[in-house]
Length: 487
Ligand code: MN
Ligand code: MN
Image 1: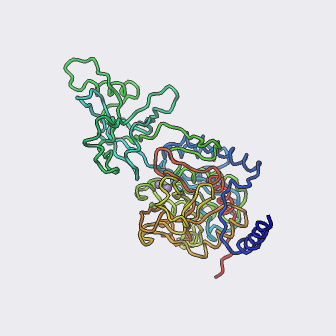
Image 2: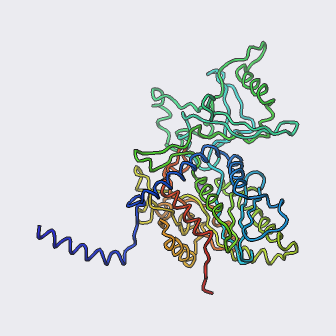
Image 3: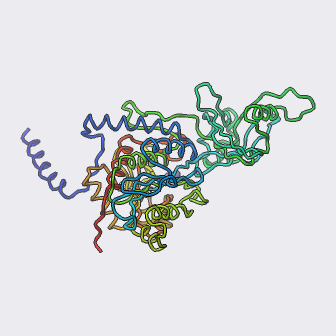
């Protein structure tokens, strides 16, 4: 007893110094108040609903616009003049959007900007997708995968088809099959284990399923029609024609995305985690949108940007690399000064502070060794501040300045937001990029941040409810924040 007491005294003494000097990492579930726990779980119920309705870029935009309009946001072109607190949005090509709450300060002082992306890895239908496999008597649709996926994860899971088709006459139809309780789903058939030993089992894992094998089965009934070769293909075409007025050529002018026909699930006995398709990066979309709608009359103008095409390198007119950001800021400046100068636009961009809000890879319990644990994100430890992304010697990264990191760290500590600092994996293990470096091209301060995710880019990505809420809290703090920068 005596000995033990002495020891505990010593530990107590040491812990005081530890308390003062050592970096504290905190599991957010420790000593969590029950009122906050309730808030977190309620927030995440709404988040799960959002994930279930927003499975494509277009659906995400639709869900967001419906929500922000109910929160008083209006299309920018519909308002005559703006005052502090005005809430406006601009949609770009149905696939990216900017939402602003005007501040009390002049816009030229810079914006507090949060950018995330609404696209997610998936399988896109090819432009000539439909064929009949005569040996198996089935009809299938060929796909070309979009973004970085592990192809073997997409076989033998229920798949849904979402997207639009532009018909010959120019009319547009929306297709969504596989989400309702009584709707059929689609599937990519993997090989049975009994017959895979000689060939498929000997392939390397990355080639277990090859790109050209990602074909989904869509039918097996022949059309009763004389003198026709591909009767099963014809049955499918006939169905599409009757239901949608489509002919085979219409696939050429379509964007049809194959996504998991699953929903967002609570994970664990304690329901502390969520598994869902598309959390990269719709978790940041949802949390930043919830944040901006909380703002009343901020000092600095707040801007939330949702971009497309991040998963394939941010190319094209709906991506961060288009001129949409400059055009939108120009439109904001023109609200109060139709003859604004180009220098005002440049000044606004240069004085802006940006969070590139995207997910990081949290330690996977089965494959922990790809992480350098001292600098890896953990589920439940809060929003992850990622000073730089890129790979192999920080190549192709935006590396946030110590000053901006310092500001964000002070801001989060002051607002008691749970956070951690991490990088993606071990040095030289691999890497990845975000929209950060493209925002930084405008000469603004940019920092990557977002929740850690396990099994990122898989059909069911795993997040922690407490991290999701900490993102929301961090964005709240950031959007109302003011950086008194030393010159
Ligand atoms: Mn992402
Ligand atoms: Mn991604």
